[in-house]
Each structure stands twice: as C-alpha cells, then as structure tokens.
Image: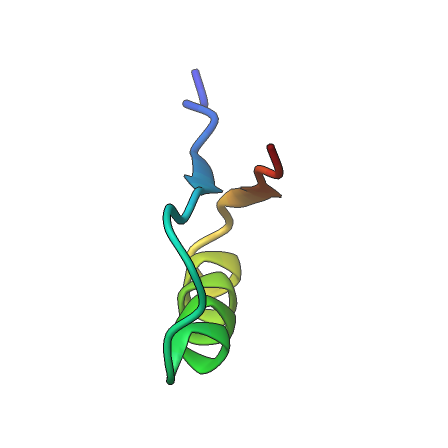
Length: 42
C-alpha cells in the first residue's frame, strides 16, 4: 500500500524578504520525494 504524501504551504502575516525562494525550494524538494504540493490562499 502506497501512502500519499502531501504538503500544504500556508504563510501568515505580510511579505518578507526571501519568502518566495524559500517556498520554491520547499516545493522543488517535495517534488523530488514525490509529494503532492498544495498552495493555500485565504
């Protein structure tokens, strides 16, 4: 049985420097490990 691996990224507050590259890096790394990645927008 394969377990589905999911990652959701939610940030709170305002903008901060380096946030976009950090999210991009997390998504790329998660994809390397076959995670489903979801962005959560409120």
